[in-house]
Image (cartoon, rainbow, N blue to C red):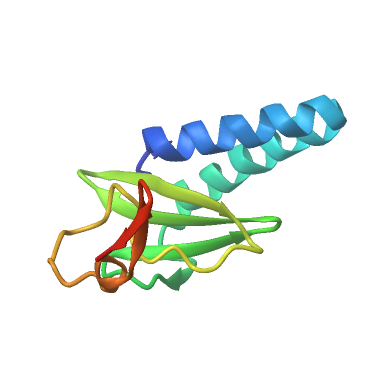
Length: 118
């Protein structure tokens, strides 16, 4: 069974979420950590159990209220990104993105120091 680990950015996001939750409900934060650990055990045993992700080589794991983006990498199952289920699909987490130079966002006008620019 391959080990399962979180990417650095996924770990930072998750720990931040747990810290916020712990301020309101420490028990809920503990349960969320336990759920992630159970999910990691399941993914180690059944890494192909989930639907394919948007990006090639990724899979999408629903763990309400969170969605995990996973991928196999060097014999390890990596949780590359975690997001709140209410957020839109993550098309390219930082660890998975490939610069192609055709980003539509670059064509939008932005405000910079008193003037709009492209």
